[in-house]
Image 1 (cartoon, rainbow, N blue to C red):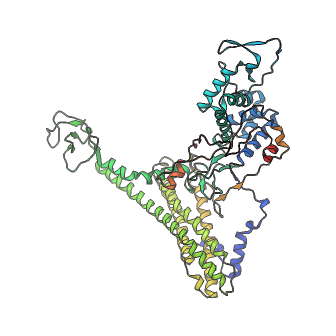
Image 2 (spheres, one colour):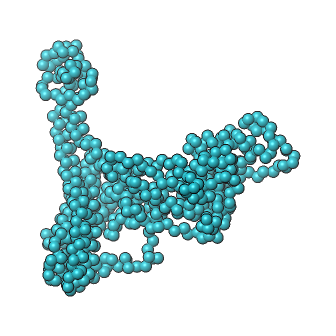
Image 3 (cartoon, rainbow, N blue to C red):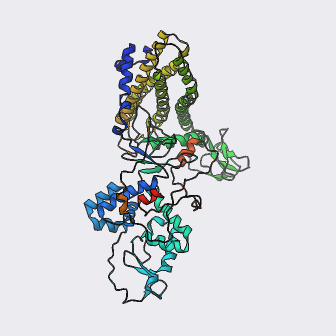
Length: 597
């Protein structure tokens, strides 16, 4: 055991049973705090709470600026639902600048209805009664038929969230109530599509809210309160990176993880070898390997070409020259290229082998969870002095978390100390010093993780009291040691490695001793009285549906690839709003009315 404990962490270990109990109490003291004192940085937004989450931001803007709901929605969509940014622009530039940049225009209509029984539409050039004309907030007035055609085209083209006035060079956004009212009279299905787009814009256009990338999709979205650079666990159980929507991959940055996935998936090192050792035939474009000393190469298709430049040639040649062909006496450096390719391949194999080994170990240990828990059940039934076996489950959880960190640390080291990303950031001497520093910490963590795994697999359900107490102290000590080493590795990465770089694009999610944070259930902070500020819609047939669950076609891809491919916005599912099967909610109805129905 002592071989795996470094001198710097000696104060973290316990030599007696009472000290180990105190260590566990200190480690889990914040778990005993009341729930009200702990606030999660992420929240789960379900299909049912999506409307409430959107209304919460709408009410904040409506209260501050004293504007209508559709104006507040237009502003929020323009500023990607970033309420703080919207308020900052309002304070810095004023209300007029805020409105004009977002396309919000407040026009005071001052004309007598009786004085103008007929009005002319500038689009269709017809004189129509006033009740067949509609004026927008910007002041432009056209007939209902022209407006309806304009709205229909915009919705079908995917511009539902920001339908602009059809007047020339007018950037004003049309009133969503008018859009809903006119479109629903001719195309009720299109009006529902319009309302769904408005509702889903809270997720599609919001940088702090993203769909959970589970497959099949759970229907949930995750909202990050403060920092987008975090790893979160959805209520469905999926753990993922909020920034790139891939599986949780710290201590790798998002760019490192994407490059590593591509390298592992595409077998790019094999492709690299083919690129170095072969050249494409200029006729059939198949890779050809040179197996002799002559620079004239013949493909299996019969085409002859020069190995130095790849150009097609005839078949007459000597050992040094080809008849009628010259490529500038170029002397290729094949030997150095082959040596470099071999070195790069060996380096990639070294890191990938260890990455894969820890990933496979994690999968095997996950299968052993039931076996270990069964040992706990048997031990609790025995007449032992020790009745509490929570140290086993705590050690098991610590093993899974540290094994994941250790696995991804090899992908991080491959790019951190390679020449692909940071060749210009560090000199070879500095790179070697930092590499040794990181590998020392990595080796200490690896040794303690393997020792923890070994003790957890011991048949402690068959041991005597003294032996169980000894195993208990060892597992607690190793759990604390592993946690401490993980913290130090993250501190080394953030401060000594990535922190010293000029480019700030490589950031990692912070380390959490208790694992990836589980998102809390969304709770609307506004009350029912505040919902009265949302005026009911005047539209006759316009309804707003609850967002549909985004579906993904199942395929043969791995779960890792499926998760990462979900970083793109999910396609809408058409035809999901059937009145006799799904309850449709009007976005403009008060909350009390929605709750009652």
